[in-house]
Image (tube, rainbow, N blue to C red; front, side, top):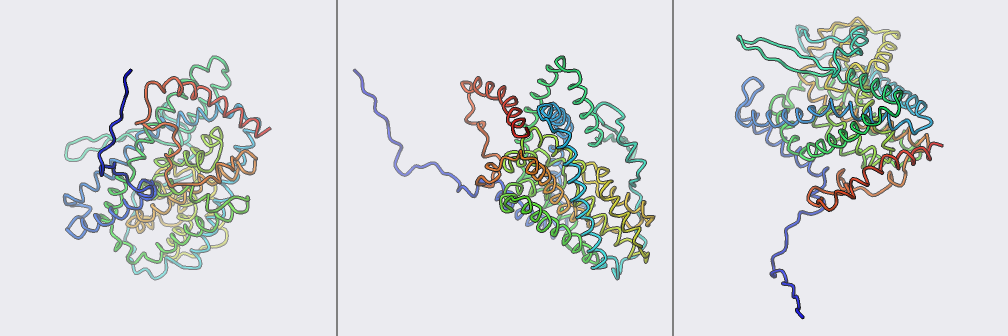
Length: 487
C-alpha cells in the first residue's frame, strides 16, 4: 500500500493577478484613450505633422491604420455569412416580415427625431455665421446623388468589390475597396434563394453557419486587441489634427456634439424607458461597442461587437439580431446621416449667405431619413453631406471647409450610430415579446467576452465532442425558443 502526499506551494509565492476592474474591456479602452492622447500630444509637440510625421507619429499612424485594416478585412465574409444565416434562421419565425417592417419603421422614426434636433440646433446656434474663414475652400471629392445611390445597389461582381489604380511618379498602386450595400443585396438574394431551394440548400446553409462561426472567432481575437488599436488611432488623430484645428469652427463642432449628446443621452434613454426597460442596463450593455466605435470610426468595423452585445447583453434573440444589426450597420446612421448633414447643410447655407425656406428644411429631413443607406456603413458622412447639399442646391465647396475637423467629429458620430444600431433591435424585440428580459437585466462586468463558454486556455481535445454536440443543438434550440416566443 502506498501513500501519496502533496507538496504545498512555497510560502510567499502567490500567482500575480490583476484586479477584476483592470481586466474590464471598458477600463482597458479608457486607459488606452489616455495613453494615446498623451503619446499623440508628445508626437505633435516634438514636430510630427501630417505631411512629415516623426518616428512616434509614424508608429501611431501604423498601429491605428493596421488595426482598422484588420477589422475591415473580415467585413465582407462577416456580412455575407451573417445575413445569409439570419435569413435562414428567420424561417422559424412566423412574423419575420413584421419584424423586418418594424425594424425599418423604427430606423425611420429615430432618424427623423435626430434630424429635427439637428435642424433645431442649426437654426438656434447659427454655426455658419461669423466664422471668419475664407470662402476659397474647394471640394473636389466624391459627391453623393440619388441616381448614383440607386445604381450603386446593383453589384458589379459577386463580392461587391472594386479596384482603383493610381500612378504616382511612374509607380502604379492598386487599392481594392468594397461596397457594403452591394454585399448586403447579394447576401439577401442568396439567403432568400437558399430558402426557396429548400432541402437541397441544407449543405450550403450548414457550411455558411460553420464559416460564420470561424469568422466570428477571428473577429473576437481582433476586438480583444482593441486597446492597442485605440492607442494608435487616438494618438494619430491628436498628432495630425490636434485640438487647435477646431479653431474658428468651434461653434460648429459644439453644435454637432450637442446634437449627438441629445440623441445619445436624451432621446435613446426616453425610448428605452418608454418601453419599460432600464436605461442603466441599456448603457452598460451597449457601452463596449460604443467605445470601440468612437475610436475606430467605423460602424461596420464595430459590427461584430455590436451584434455580440445586442445578443448577449441586451437579450435580443440571435435569429433576429443577426438580421437587424448588419442591416443597421449600413442604414441606421443617426450621427452620420441625420445630425451631421442637417447641421452642416445649415452651416453651409449660413456661411454663403443663403436663406433656407421651410421646403428646404423638409428636404433635409427627407434626405436624412431616406438616404442614410448611401453612407454604406463606412466613414462616409462626407458623401451623405454632398447628397444633402446637392439635393438642396447648396455649394459643394462648403464641404471643403469642414474636412479639417471631420475625424474629430466622426468619432462622436460613429458612437451614436452604433448605439442606435443596438437600440432598435432591442425596442422591436421588446414590442414583439421576444426580448430576453432576464438577460437584459443581468449584472454586467464591462467585459463583453466574459460569457464565453470556453476560453482558449480552457479548451482541450476532451471538450471537442461536447462542444460540437452543443453547437449542433444550439441553432435548433434557439429557433424553437424564438418560435415559441412569437407564437
